[in-house]
Amino acid sequence: MIKSMTAFARAEKSENQMSVQVEIRSFNSKYLDIVTRIPQIYMSLEERVKSLIATHLTRGRVEVRISIKNETEGAVAFELDVTKAKAYYDILTQLKTELNLSSEIAIEQFLGAGGFVQPAEVISDLDKDWHVIQASINVAMVDLVAMRKKEGDFISDDMKKRLDHIENSVATIEKDANNLVPIYQERLKERITSLTRGLVEIDPARIAQEAAFLADRSDITEEITRAQSHLAQFRTIMQSDEPAGRKLNFLLQEFNREFNTMSAKVGNAALSHIIVNVKAEIEKLREQVQNVE
Image 1 (cartoon, rainbow, N blue to C red):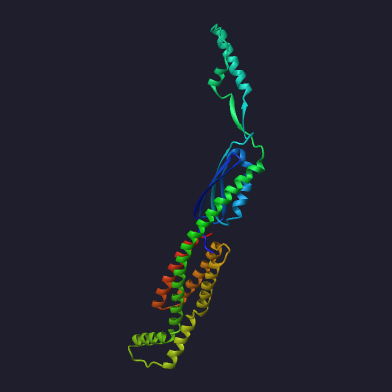
Image 2 (cartoon, rainbow, N blue to C red):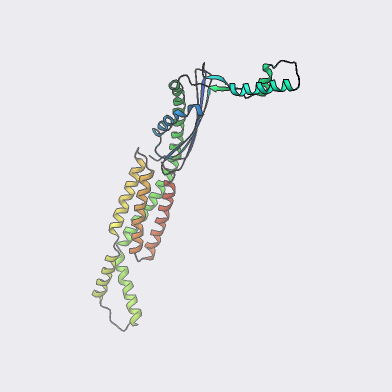
C-alpha cells in the first residue's frame, strides 16, 4: 500500500477538567524521526508519546506539539520564594529607617513587586493524565494516516501510469531486439561496400556469421527478463499492506542497472532512444518514491 509521508492532523480531547490538544505534522525522511514539543512537567511522558506514534508510522519526520490545560483539583498550586521575599522585606525596612517613615510595610507592596509567588503545576496522577493524552494522539494519528493514505493514492495512480509506459517500452525493445540480425547484416554490407567501393565480392555466409556474432554480443534477453520481473515485483509491493518506500527505492536501483546494461549493449539508435525515455520514467518514479512511507 502506498502512503505519502506528508500530512497534518489536529485533535483535541477533554476529560475531568483536563484538555489536551495535539498537532502532528509529518514530512519526508529516510527514517522515522519523531520530534516532540511537550509541556515541561509532562516531559517524562515523551518516550510514551514516541512509542505510541511508532505503532502507527514506520518512516518520516514527525513533529508533535501537545498543549495541555489541566484544571483538576491539585493540578495547580503556588509556591513562595521565601528567600527573595525576606531580602525584599529587609530592603524595605532599611528604606523605612533611612527615610524615617512611620507607615507599616504592607503585603500589597510585596504583591506589587511580584516574583515572590509563582504558579507551580503539580501532577497528581500521571497515568490518569496519560490516558487523556494517549486518546488525543490516537485520534490525531487516525486522521494523519488517512491523509497519508489519500495522498498515497494520488502517488500510486501516477506510478501505475509510468509502469504501464515502461512495460510497453520493454515489449517494444524485446520485439525490436529480436530483429537485430537482419539489421546488422545490412549494416555490414553497406560498410564493406563503402570501404571497398564495390570491388570485393561479399560473402553472404560470412556476413551472416559476423551479424550473428554482433547480435550475440548485443543480446539483452536476460536484461529484458529481469526488467519484466522487476515490473511485476514493483506492482506487488505497491499492493502489499507493508510499507513500500524502501523496497521500491532499492528495486528502482536494480531497474536502472538493467537499462544501463541494455543501453551499453544495443547499438541501435531507435532502441537507444526508447531506453533513454525509459530511464527518464524511472527517474520520475524514483522522485515519487522519496515521498512514500
